[in-house]
Length: 316
Image (cartoon, rainbow, N blue to C red; front, side, top):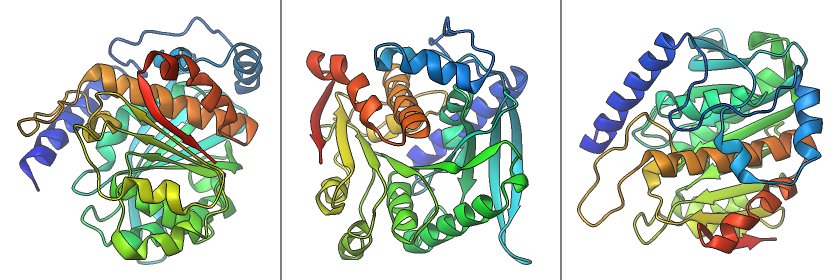
């Protein structure tokens, strides 16, 4: 494990302990609670979609309580077990499921706050742990099997999972795993890539096969150049959008409790930029879950693009 990953792992474990002490309630630093008070996911959908699309809304903790189940084991076969952390949104009706995939040398705990934040907005979340040094093609295929399993038997997670609204999210090489899962036919609604990293010559053949909507949320490459990030936009044929967050680092695309120190000359992960990432992620996931596309999320980025907080917007 690299020193940076060790710091992030320690921060993430502290974050999980903090969540437990908070009683599983989704208390994110700085963000506070939205003024929306719907009783159901349907009411929340109607309320949000009837107002101006605005990413700022998703900086706030959503209106729903969250039940956290750490180390929830999925049985892919008689001998294959997948370790996960499960975050269930409180409403009784069926809702989307967001599956989060970590990157190289990271873990499911690095996405704890993102998963909780999504669940406060009425979307169940599942952070999965796969081999964090790869091979990432195999991880992508395993992720596709996980989605297929849940799609066929949602009760292994929760009977309230809407199997037609499973959304995949991946950070760094986990973004490649998500892309491969989509290319391999995972029955998901689409994918959100958090500053994804490419795998070289083997990745484009998978990207060309993707026929689901994809949103790429990138860091600022002046500070955190990521291997072959543009490959994802170039080779996915259609239904893909990409935007970068100014001054954000690669590690901001996760959400450990504390920023990790980085090498001289590189941007330092900060809570403010992590909140910006989780806002964009939540806007994108909510848009896909409730409209079937990322168009609503794209519209919500308008003010941030105009101010320069978001830049390098691409869409096809």
